[in-house]
Amino acid sequence: MLVKNLKTDITWAVTEEHGARLLRTEDFEEVEAPKPKRAPLKKTETEE
Image (cartoon, rainbow, N blue to C red):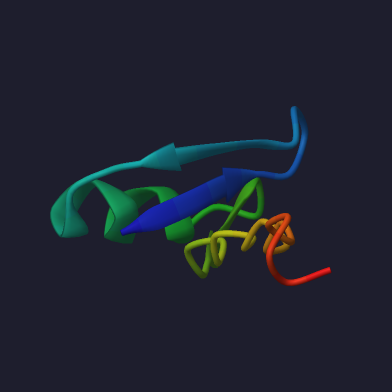
């Protein structure tokens, strides 16, 4: 589970049990895992 500290803007990976405790406060929110960015494909000399 990923939780974000709203005061420091830092995201932490925590266990479900620990995340549940943190989410009871107003200082944390659960967040989705960021999606990896894909690098653009480079053209080869034969494609140009």
